[in-house]
Length: 254
Image (cartoon, rainbow, N blue to C red; front, side, top):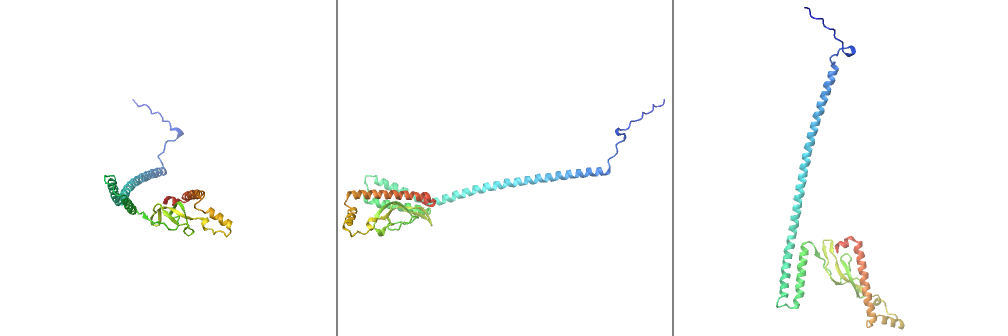
């Protein structure tokens, strides 16, 4: 028996059969694939570079932290080394003061004449301790001309006209470190009496008034002089406070 005849096939949509890709399309696909591979390779290289830089940055941070810790240790060690002689001097001073305190509190109290030399020795020992820190005594003494950079006025005292503006009494020592003033010396400054500097009048009436005003035996005049002295001290204190408030270096050096 003969096979049935084959049915005719319908053509594809559009009426045409699919054709094989052309040579140009194949080349474009290959080029696109090559570019994708190149981009992938570059991204991998960039990720590797970023990773290495991150490791280097972390290593630098570790080095900086270690150097900072070593620097702090060195500074602390240098400070402790600098304080070693100061501690040694303070140890001696502590022992001296404790020993003398026990002596003066004992049954046999030393003579009062020994108190002055003892306090002077303690002051010298303290000055030596300060010297080991770089603070040297300026050697302020009575009779020096008043220097606002080195002296701090703590009061005034009447003096002759020729001694006006000189140091009458030193209440504390000044300390310096090279050219820098660490602490000003509190001093009493001499101030000339204006009435004493004025010549006496040849007129008998005026001369009598001047003698009466300048008499030291007059209680009223003495009370007035004390009030004038207190007022001068108050003005000096106000002026000193204004100087300290106006000058940062003077305030730090006091």
